[in-house]
Image (cartoon, rainbow, N blue to C red):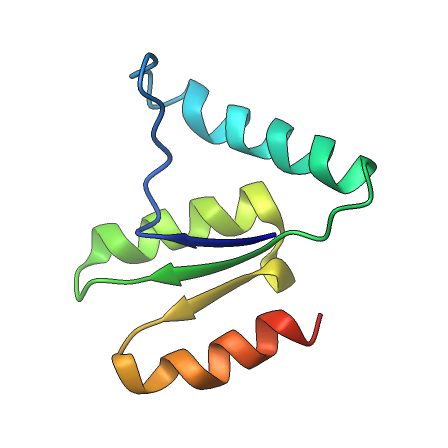
Length: 85
């Protein structure tokens, strides 16, 4: 499974910023237990908040499963890196 994200976990009926990353981590662990490989492309903005959100995604998915896309030119390389996992 390939997640494409802006780095902000979101749920339509939950808005607790502490709960959402834990919920994401739990869902990823369930998928992996079921034999589904999970990778993430995180499209970053040019601000500190984007970097903080990327680090939160790395904590939820694992450092090697979450790749940063800082510019459009990064997309092909980072996509191939995700698919090679």
